[in-house]
Each structure stands twice: as C-alpha cells, then as structure tokens.
Amino acid sequence: MYPKKLLRWYLLYLIFVMLIMGKNSPVDLFWFIHKLPVFASMDKPAKYFNFFHVFIVAITGTSVIQVSRGFLRKHVRFYESAVLVLITLTALPLLNQGRHVYKNLFNLTLGAVPRNDVFCQTYLMDQDRTSGKMYYNLLMNMGTINWYGAILLKENAAPRYFLEYKGEEIHASENNDYFGEIYFMDEREGKYGIHPSHVKITANKITIRLPQNQIKEKELARLVINQNYHKSWRSNIGKVQEYNGLISVDLSRINEDVLVLKYVPLDFYIGALISFLTLLFLLIYSGIFKRIKRFCQLFNR
View 1: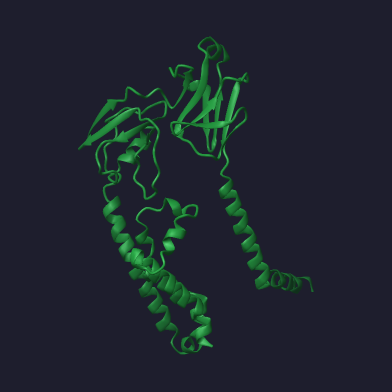
View 2: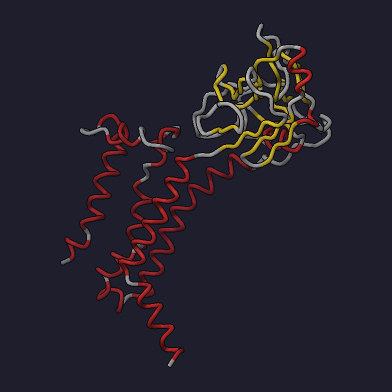
C-alpha cells in the first residue's frame, strides 16, 4: 500500500537526482527541459535543482500525511514541529543569500543626477549591479540595459548614457549613437528623433502620432523603437519588423496619422488557457462542484 502511494515521490526523487548530476547524468534531462518556453531563459540552472526543497514539499504534502495517518494520530505535535524546523532550515539559506544582495540596495543618496523628464536608457560601466544602482536609475526615470537578473537576453537597445558610479558621484558619458527611444530613418538610414509629445506608452501598448508632413518631406521610410524586437508585437498598420534586433515599422506605404503597437504574447495566453482548463478538470475530477451543490442544498431545506 505505502510503496504505491509513494511512487510519485520516488519518481520525483529520481528526476531531481538526474538533474543534480548535470552532465554526469546518464540521461541529460535538462537538455530537453531547456528547449521549453521560459526554461530556455534560465541562467545557472543548477540552483533550481535543490532536492532539499523538493523534500520539504514531499514532507508537507498530502500524500505523506495520508500515508502517515496512523503515526500522526499519536505524534501530531512532533510532526508539526518537524515540518516547521524543516521549512525554517530551507528558508534560512535563501534569506542569508538575499541579505548579501540587498543590504545596500537603497542606501544611495538622491540628487546626484537630475531626474529626466523623458525616459531614456543607460548602461552601467562597472560590474557590480546589485548595490541599488538600478533602483536609483528607476527613480531618475532611466532604464538599465545591462540589468541584474538571471534571465539571459541579448540586449540590442542603445543607451543614452554610460554611467559609472564612484561612491556618491555619478559620471555620465553621452552616447553619440543614441537618437532617442523612438526615431525615424530615411532611405539612406539617416536618423531623426521624434518629439516626446507625439508618443504615449502604457502597459503593453505604444501609441505614436505620425507627422505625415515630416515623413513625406524627408522621405522617412522606417520608424524604430529602441527596445528588443519580439514576434509578439502587433501593429494596427503594417507589419512589425526586426531592425538590428529592435522593433521597427515600415512607413513607405502608411498614410495613417496614428500608429498603435500592442504586445500580444500568444504563448502566455495559450499557457493560461491550458492552466485554466487543467484547474477546471481537477475541480470536476475531485467532485468539488457536487460538494458545493450539496452544501447549498442544506440551506435550501
């Protein structure tokens, strides 16, 4: 009886042991996992294969509780105390690691650089990106291209400033190849900026008022947005294209005055739909709807 109920945990143990072995494993499971969406962006994957965390889940899971029901009747307090100790032991390493990263995060003095009225992007010259510099840039209305994170993404955007922090002093160097977060290009790849009042940016949406007179006068052929291109971007006019890794739209056949770009991640919506249907199936399988119906009938009697 017990081995059958614990079979899932034996299988989970085997999978994580193979993942922990890395390249020494007889079967490289992570090679397959790394091809999947989201998992493909994982950096330093070994830190996710912590069997102790899976062990905690197993200890606190309902299957173990059911298997140990006879033992628990006699030692409920012991079990609860053991679970609490194990959870604490799991959390302590995570808290200790986070303390070293975030202890100096918000200690920078504001006012070294005036806040930008118009959003722009910057590039941090030093290697230490965990001491609050990104947070300071955020308050100054500046993005950080080489942001600190565990997701490996190639950055194609051009920074307006190259920033170097020395204590409370900030040294900013202008980038001569920066033409704004949104700019036009003519057929000879000459670049022209666009006035910020023509642009409105909201969550997953960019609205741009196109100056048709300027477009026709200077024979502007392309609009470029200083953000990484992704296939999920959609446009109300024309097709969103990739230009040197950035978002762009061909203007050669566009006569409309307003361009609207929307980010529509179909993979996310498909995944959300699958998750919803799975949850619905589990609820039906568990008979929860019947239980709710019976519960409501008690009040109708």
